[in-house]
Image (cartoon, one colour):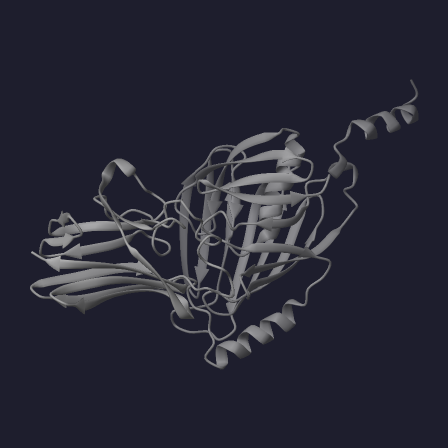
Amino acid sequence: MPRHALLPLLLALLPATLAAQGRTDRAAFITSLGSDTLVVEQFTRTANRLETDLAARVPRTRRIHFVATLNPDQTVARLEVSVHPAVPAPDAPAFSGEMVFSKDSAITTVHVGDSTQTLRVATEPGAMPISSASYALYEQIFLHVRRAGRDSLGFQVVPIGGNQAYQTYAVRRGGQAVDLDYFGLPAHAKVDKDGRLLALDGRETTNKVIVTRVAKADVDAALKDFAARDAAGQTMGQLSPRDTVRATIGSAHLVIDYGRPHKRGRDIFGVVVPWDQVWRTGANAATGFTTDADLKVGGTTIPKGSYTLFSLPSKDGTKLIINSQTGQWGTEYHQDKDFARVAVTTEALPQPVETFTIAIDSQGAGGVLKFQWDRTQFSLPFTVQ
């Protein structure tokens, strides 16, 4: 067969994305949490390079720039990152860095001023970098899954700056649907025939974001807008800041440590917090509860000590779960460690509460725990033994 006759055959055997090496893909992602826009991202991708520019609001306004060198299977060989706060501060310096992936490790080097730090993380072949800000990097995962040509694919992800790799997987659900495991919970993605990310719904995960693909976004304008909000005292800060409630009721000293998510225009109970599913009663790390005296809750005595508070919201009657395990992440719940489940009183509030709030108030001869969010209050009276 003449050499020129082989060309069509060879091209037919090439994967679609390699055959389109000359094609440049340009698009943008908008990441939102309820009514708030968190990130505006514009990216350019070729067969062997991804470059993306982001305006991010969390915890304060920053410009983030990534450049990834891609392998033929659409995994990342090298990732360069630079971060520049809109307003530099001692606790938010500009920095740059790079991640280099080999078959058995990811080596991260971070440069802050004159300081350089290096971190090596053991990985399996095919490990991918992730950033909570960049969905162009998440799209790279879907492109890798598409290249693998499988209905499900297990692999590791390494958060940028993280000190370990996490096992995860992607599963095709038919048509354009792909589920991506996000630390044990599914993010629902919509992709096109080439694996490009069209939309992502993370509301079933702890991340809760909605991601939308658009043709183009003005990162500079978004950065200017976000920075102006920061200057006006509207810095977004942590999405669910930590808080501590302390109270003295009789002879008992009580402490509750919890994360405080915001409503952000969303319906909470039955939507953000599903009915009939165990909830961490806050956000991020598990909600801790400590008492230095025995408490009587309903017909149950809670001995002095430290516990974790979960809850089981339900239309038919919500329960507070007092669990004996402590110090864990909020999604790590083990029912066999439940000390007690007690019914709480549910009341409608006249005005919505924007930020989830726990209070400990005096009431009669004892006290009451109150949990308020959106238009709902749960309360639980107790006495000190």
